[in-house]
Length: 114
Length: 116
Image 1: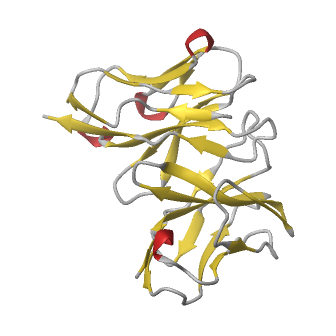
Image 2: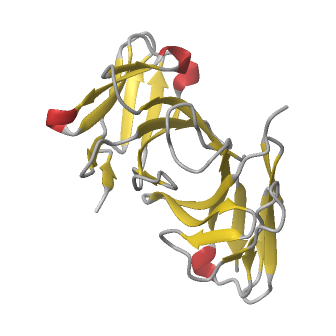
Image 3: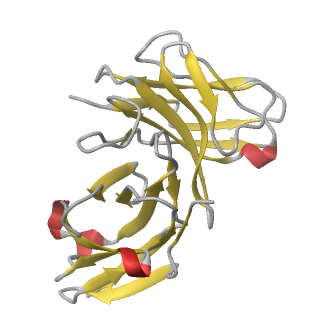
C-alpha cells in the first residue's frame, strides 16, 4: 500500500540557516510527489510537485526538492530560512495511477528562531 | 479570483444534529474532494467526485455523505455527527481528475468542526 513518512514531527531552524525536511514514500510505480505548506489558520498551498524528468524540482518561495528513487525520498530544501517560513509542511504522494487522491504524510512543523 | 470556498469556517454542534458543510469552486473544475485533518494523522481523504453525479469513497468515508449536483458545488453532509468527527475539514478541486503535469489540487481554507 502507498504511504508517506515524514520522520521529523517538529524542527527548529535559526533564521538564515538552511533547511531540509525529510519525506520517504512507498509506491510501486513512478510516483507523483508533492510538498504542501500550511500556515497557521490557513489552507494548504502547493510548494512544488514532481511527476517525471529532472529529479531536482524548483518551487515557490525559494524551495526545492530532490527526488531520489534509490532512497524512496523526496526531501524539501531551502538554502536560507525566513521567519515567515514557520508553518506545517506536508509531503504527499498520488494515491493511484489515476491520481484521484493524495496520501499525505503526518506533517512536519517548522519553527524559526531569531 | 480563482478560489475554493467553504462554509462555515467554524462550527460547534451536538451529537446527532445533521449538518452540511458547503464547498464551492469558481474555476470550472471537474474534480473535487474532501479531506479531514487530525493531529498526528495528517490529511485523509473522505470522498471525491470525478464530475457531476460521479462520486466515490476515499479512505475514511464512514459517517459522511456527499452529493455533486452541480459542477461548482460539493457539499459534505454529516447525517448524525459524533464526537469522533471533530476535525478540520478541507475541500479541494482540480481541473481534471488525475495528477498529470499541469494539473494541481487547490485547497479551500478549511472548516473546523467540533461535535459535543
